[in-house]
Length: 236
Ligand SMILES: O=C(O)CCC(=O)C(=O)O
Ligand SMILES: [Fe+2]
Image (cartoon, rainbow, N blue to C red; front, side, top):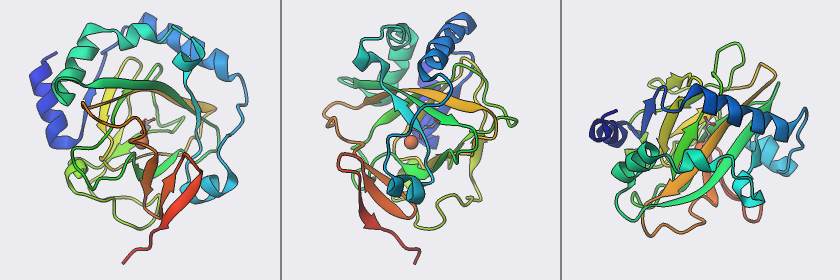
């Protein structure tokens, strides 16, 4: 692994994919912990307006907030930390670990930016770990637009339409995907039984903890802290 090269790719594309970053046995163990937590049919916590407008159907879990220590070994991996530092710079901080679960027949996630892009320096970093293969038979592929972290606001328009230059990622078990919060991204619908990813969010020095409170979609800006649509967006 050449950390300098990976950081350069990240800076150019707004994301970088590293296959086989985590050992298969570790992934199997974490995968089991997550499946055990969700069981068969987790409940949704978002209100209906969010589900209806956002085309985003995920059930989040913050294991470390509940005292679960199974995920610490990933967070503490030295290569993981070194790559994070190369991308975020000195003084970066880990925010939280969040598992995002989607069940069969749900729409995945619409196009979004995790936080508003007006200040290019103010952003979160997604460090996404996949504990089992994302395959076309199950769906839930992660889609990104390369370089869009430097192109400002996600254009208003069809929340789940296609971009010409989009790239579909199919991360395998053990793959690490590092994704800039301003990069335009989405998750395709889930056709198989379920799909999840585990996100170790981090941020550059000085980033407020609530940097991802407002999410930018193609049809709205949504604020999670009070479950409200703070801006409706129309294509020009
Ligand atoms: O689960 C994924 O592959 C992407 C999730 C996502 O949008 C995020 O972590 O901000
Ligand atoms: Fe996201």
